[in-house]
Image 1 (tube, rainbow, N blue to C red):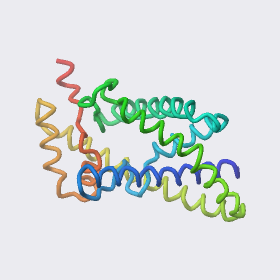
Image 2: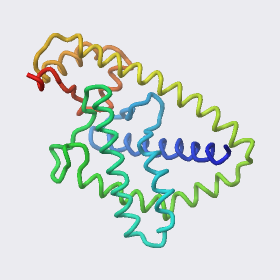
Image 3: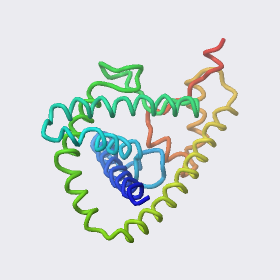
Length: 218
């Protein structure tokens, strides 16, 4: 149980680091602060899970940065691809699209970001995680338990609220009587632009687009 709580704490730590990276990227690219990610809180779980996978499988290659870079890029790209696929199937929407970038696979992943993940993997395994581990090892088990349980409650509550918001966006799209995907997206964004939580999610994913399955089945 204690191992689970420690890994959950690590998940939250790197999810927060990932959120910081996304916010910084948005600040550089769009010159404004955007609360990135699916969840309301300052976490991007895909980064946390990516970090967990790399820690579990790549720590043994710590002395070989090239191997860590290559395998880190592969692990995170696979995770990103399947996250995109699963979210699309769940909500009939494409949350990000790299089709405009060269060397992409179905717009879900692309070479430049895969290389960036590889670089982050090297930084994580060779420098950041040893330091984070040393800090966690200094915390008494009882405090690890208390902190992790509180974070689990907050995290699960955020997931429930956020998925409810996404479902509302999906229902809004289903109720729009338009035939073309572009018209659906435009109408949905018009309907939701004044709704705080829904509009935040659309701003967090500027490439967000609904998949018009009715159109595809004609």
